[in-house]
Length: 104
Image 1 (cartoon, rainbow, N blue to C red):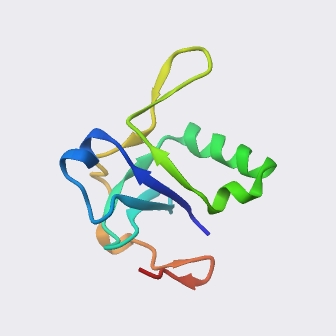
Image 2 (tube, helix red, strand yellow):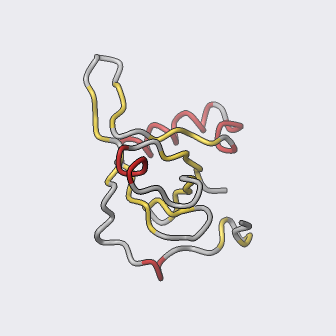
């Protein structure tokens, strides 16, 4: 099962795609409904999610909220996603997750 996100970034507010739900696969974010590319996640975000899931596996089934920046414990902020996805081709969208077809 891929990580799922509710997209709450500024770009998604101004130019929404379907329900603004996306899943992470092949290093990119893809619209859960129409399979269009929706950007990329920073490697630190994926690393942090992987660590949390190693401790709490049930978190993987939840929908996570994705904003433009995340607040770090030391008070700094970090960009969480590339909303442009200029290097992503629609034909590269995976149609299966863990051997199961995507159901819309």
